[in-house]
Image 1 (cartoon, rainbow, N blue to C red):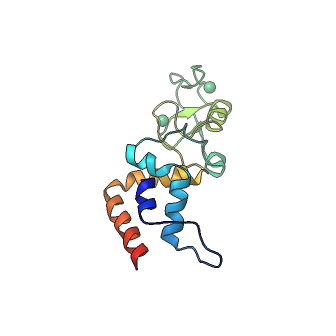
Image 2: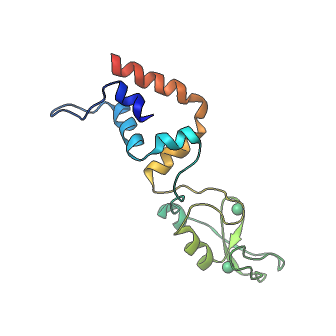
Image 3: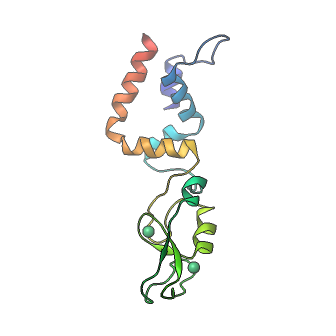
Length: 147
Ligand SMILES: [Zn+2]
Ligand SMILES: [Zn+2]
């Protein structure tokens, strides 16, 4: 992918040049190695922590049975105990899940992914979702360079 841009003679911004939105986006993608991630469909690094705002807003629910346990510490929840519930409906001790989400963004039980504050990772996720549309995007980018 890097070669693709090199072939197009894509150099540094000259002074006073206003960054074209698409070019700017592509530049960030390349900078972060996200383009290569898009090529392989794999994120090359450990997924980043969950977004602070999201973590702050994880709802607390009251456990209504005593047969479920926290997937992190494996201790059974007590009926009536308050637990943090992720959007995938898995519950955890606040302490357990907050420590976990400070390290990575997915549910330790089912790998459901929460948003992150990492812009390049979010870009990668969006790009992955739009894998079908990717070619089209690159064509648009290509065209914008020759206009
Ligand atoms: Zn726990
Ligand atoms: Zn889950």
